[in-house]
Length: 361
Ligand SMILES: [Zn+2]
Image (cartoon, rainbow, N blue to C red; front, side, top):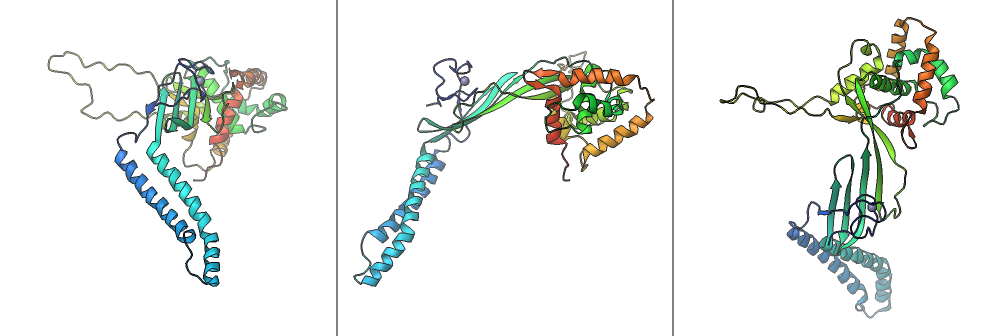
């Protein structure tokens, strides 16, 4: 019997058809790995556990079944030893009998829905009754338009004093005042999206587990960012060291699998043209994956980014008039909502704080 559990939200009694709690179509559970085919293995395991349980039962009988001797000392010794051994033997027996039951009747299940609005869930049943379940649910947006950011991270870095003082002070932000490198990552991504070099989308996720959290379905989703690289950076975009480092991280990630000679499209004997290879959509990559590849092998990527930005600022022609432009763009960026309840700055900060910590390499 398949689990009565909704894979999309973890509702225990989803009802017939669509889930009564979240409205998802009925979950199709498939037997997980190790089901059915390994009956012999299960039976062997159960037998071994059964023998151990039997040994525990023998120990209990040995102490409680009959007196070892007729003398008072022997009986006192028996009672004292029984008090030490019997409770453990009984507890062990209970656990072993339960393990036998589980190994004979436990089944693992999994369910998945692919696509932009999907989930992956696993569950276990014992004799048809759900004993545990967990799942990850996601919904992905289409490519979205961030607010336009014409200034690159170096230009913002040049005015960071005013940005911090006038814009960021007193604002509720994840982890207090954001580190310089984290802010520059926010700006660099927004700038390259504005320029059309990358596209950005959100993926909101949440987890459920059953039965530890029986009413987990909440409107709180965790938003994460996904990037799609549309073209290589042009020469003036490469002047921004943060964008350049992110681009290099992208390249480390997106190295296409090597095409071997056999797989290469060839001309067939009756063909006049090479076989056409269907154009594939460029992959969407999680910002967290890009950040993991940022300056690999460096103990402190943040310090390195900051140093490179300050060297780039030194080369920048001074233009005080830009400060107001920078502030205007940054205000829009700081307030931009990528999903209900998730603003862009905090989403990027959460990901940078997780991945740009001091690495121990
Ligand atoms: Zn549901």
